[in-house]
Amino acid sequence: MPLFLNDEQTMLRDTAKDFVAASAPVSHMRALRDSNDATGFSRDLWKQFAEMGFTGILIGEDAGGLGLGHVEAGVVLEEIGRNLSPSPFLTTAVAAVEALKGSAQAERWYPGILSGDTIAALAIDEGAKHRNSVGMTAERAGNGFRLSGKKQFVTHGHVADLLIVAARTAGSTDDEQGVTLFAVPKDAAGLTATPERLADASLAARVTFEGVEVDADAVIGEVDAGRDPLGRLLRAGRTGASAEMLGVGGGAMDMTIGYLKERKQFGTLIGSFQALQHRAAHLYAEMEVARAAVLKAQQLLDAGDDKAEQAVSVAKAMTGLATTLAVQEGVQMHGGMGMTDAFDIGFYMKRGRVLAEMFGDSNFHADLLARAAGY
View (spheres, rainbow, N blue to C red):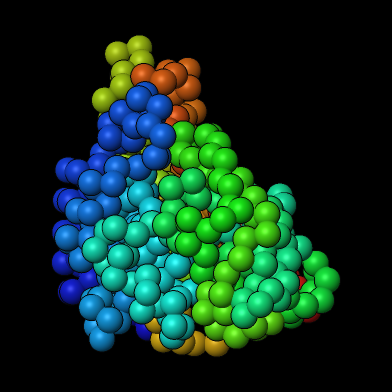
């Protein structure tokens, strides 16, 4: 597989680049933060994403979507990251769409996603560091299930129309099997979502399920076999978060290089200092290696390759490291001013930090890879 975009993907990239830069630049995010916006993103912009066809990238043509793949979704996500654009694209049009594929719930929720009327949130994590445990219970009740427990770090959970929930229908908290995935509507009785501001000013909710009752049709896939759709969700989410991090790191790097070319010290452009040139070259190399890893993971996912799982972990670990380097170097090379709110570079550091934690950080995925190799 060639590690570059084809002509159609390049055209999509150019379209997404122009659209996102014009409609949702960093100033858009800053305005939402300054107004203490309670939603966390612009619903009007989400509708525009739908009008552009972006929300249907991973939805098949038979369901009204574009029938494209993770490479194309990543192209859009990279531009979202580059502009720090608050958007439910990753959780809704990527992770949720993949989880719903092939299920009866897809027919219910895909039309709203395609039209930009539906927001999906992922109620997966229960503890710190994206651990694999699922303690929330789903007990049989009548012709359905009763959900009880708590989830955290549920991005957009306070405004989501749909929550995709991992709950335990058999076994104990750390068992691999016995997990079932559910599609829970926002108006379900007993569901409470409490939003909290994250470091990057985005909103994620702590969600409590107090005897939330759903019917059997809410099950995504098969009872006790939720690891399959959950695996699709996680692979898509991790790869998508990696693509968005590429944009964050790339945006920070471009901003820093631009600053090196205009900032003078003692009458000399600081970009002429060899030490800073070395650091900039090192950063560029790290970002390019991460870019190759992300594209490889996307291509393997699109091909349905058995090696996709490990490639996804490589991509998430490498982009976490490369983007962290990019934002840290950006702040340092901007000097003390880089830590002030007047400069945008600090926003890139905060967004990079949140994305690095989503779906498992670099250490989490390095551990997965080590275990898979028998260590």
